[in-house]
Length: 215
Image (cartoon, rainbow, N blue to C red; front, side):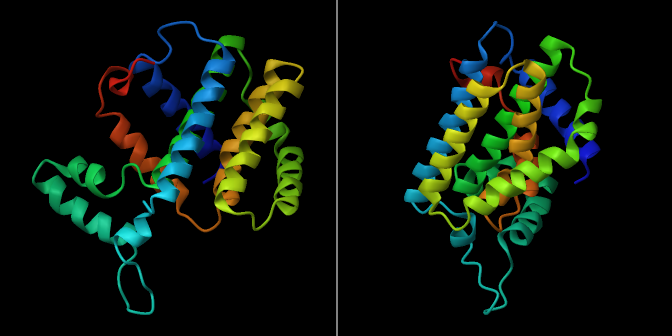
């Protein structure tokens, strides 16, 4: 995805969160940030339970079987024809660790765009600082390669708290949260995060107020 694609996607994520009531009340940045961290906790629990889309579909290139994505798209087309395509998502994709990491991305982008909205930040800063931010995150990744899943989740949690504590203004906080979201896929290796995010965004549009939760 291009940077502009990310920006448009982030806008859509924030708009949907507003439509679902997540910004009806005034909450602190800490409130939204700890919800991001809670998704990392959910990802760990899913990983511990073996809730992995690849294992669910017994993906094996050696055996010539479909990837979970191709399998799902084939089945989704069938279910969509019958008007119940999101039932398939709930039964086979939702609550896997990949789905929870998609939630991390979505919540990060929601928080980033809330900061933009509240502080009237010009989004051109993303392009202006793109090379600098990419260089910084590439350096972070080199230091934290090949960590176990739990350690990776801890490291991201620590990174988010550090970003919050050390950012001197909302503009810098926005930049770091936005680029952390972009790099989430790199933290977890070879998963099709963009696909999982797109599917979760579509699914979230079908859910009720506050996704049926208290906040």
